[in-house]
Image 1: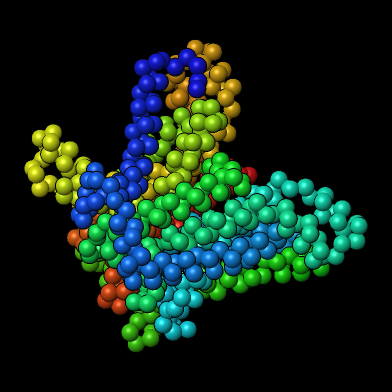
Image 2: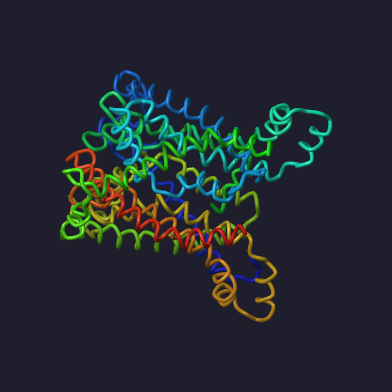
Length: 267
Length: 274
């Protein structure tokens, strides 16, 4: 802390920080609280303790179906976005392509362009050219949104890498693909892994593209929750939401281990 | 030359994906917005939106709520980011984790939490009732206040992290020099730190504003059908009344608004990285 700050001010500052943290975390705490309540009505503070709403998730066809869809989608998005992102990040890092700056802008633009605009465009284009929306439309949509995260984490790792390693491999006779496979890619691994976990989290939590592209058969977990919230929420919604939060905590812990969460400050 | 071919092969799949699944959809949306029922070019969809007081009311609500939300985020975000930048690294890491946790939680889940807190019998109306401010059946759901509360919670982490990135780069010695020369803590804050942090505050606010004007899930669940925002109007036209050209025109209007806010953002963040 800065020296020479009046004690009263110091106290006030910490009060403000604490209140802000409570405000930011309140909805998460409430959802977790409701999920373990015994009551069949949504109420906070919870009454009693029970895990029956978690059991209820797996007895509901709609939730099991949505969970399966979301998991399949997230895994597929993670794998493909990571592979595509790895290549793109390496090419961007080398800066040998003409217009690299412009290309970097293109690759990162899904990050700042609101997804509702992209979602509606994708719905219209897919319907005009392919036909009714399907799982594959959602896969492509989520890939576009997840790609910038993979590219950014990988670029962050590559920025700290040693450019002379590839030079050394070249002088010792390694071919182009050998250099990428054995020298460049291994250096990317922490960034790629962190990007992969980001990609998974984004696809698993995403609710805008999934909402525009939803059909009765194509409902992801966040959309299933959204449907319930529009009509008749019961504590099962809280249990599903708590599971999703648990997964997020787990993913943050992994990303922090791999790359250090502090790197993502200042976006 | 062969280097370029190699790099093009590496970036190729990504370029292809973004060209086909990002640039092309947005182009299609632009095209549909100016196509009439007979297939000819028209501005009727824009005219319909911009001349109807119902839709203009939606635009006005979206803009003033977003300005309010953005300002609250900046006013809370700056002191929070400053404190985070000045605590010891271990504590800072924990604060960052506590801010990133809600940021990475699904918007649907967070909005649900607010529905429980603000709805009839929820903790917030209940406390107000106990304090004697309101009647027993008071609810904050389906009010503009609910939208503002929910959206500030969604966007505050963005703003805070954005400002933190800039405050962390401010040279501590400037602050010390100012204090040594007799400036009070507040004078230093006002004349040294705030001006240096301003690019971060502006960039974070512009980003928060674009996210706010285009957000759909939180405003529509917390505000309900009687308080629609632009995104909800687009969603209704695209999925309920199936007026795609009209939905496309509204999206173009939203896109133009977002780009107007993003242009200074790109300039500000570009200068920061450059």
